[in-house]
Length: 275
Image (cartoon, rainbow, N blue to C red; front, side):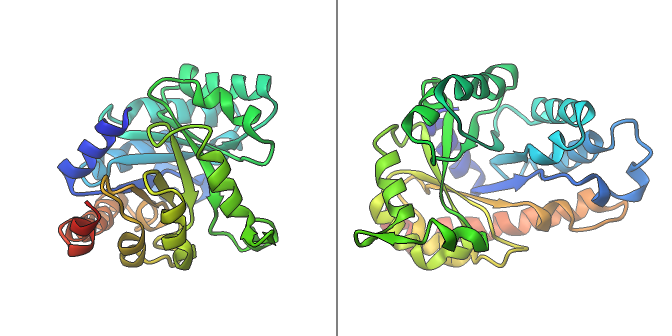
């Protein structure tokens, strides 16, 4: 998916919501547990219920890989069920020496039809370059994450700058705003204005809204650019809005609530000023 296609979807729907499919078999409603493929059936119903309110889906591959072959098969069926109009993210956090990353890129961009994959930048450019070589595909690099351990490395200073700042500045030169995004956690709202100055044109994948307590209003105000520049992810808040037979309907209601709030921000003065 191109940047133009992504921004057109955002504007058409009035939404920059990404729904996370971090599907935990132990949390799937009881009435689906006897289904031949409960993970896919849960995802299928979630996708069908929420697709009108979001522009992207993020599949956290760990939840599927933990189930072995059945999990991988459920992930494959899930990504194929997501409509072609939606941006499909493999949250895999890959990154290794060049020939290994080349195989990871093939897995998610050729064997599976993902539009984007998350990667870790620690091993440097040659570990990320194979992902960037794919046309109309996106590499989403970990920038400033929402976990408590971000302080161990990302928020350490050297030479007057944080490590995450060096990552943003260095990595942004390896690609361009049409094939490179950054993960910036919603719980790091105080840093968003500085991050936007460092990378004014890039999109950010923003986890941490909802269950982790990030503020959608604050992020939207501080980080929107002329193309919106945000994909705000909600996983548990949507997927597990209910544990009963109405889980899909309740997920749709939560997703619609996020969409409606986002539509308001897209009409707001701070977005119009960014444009």
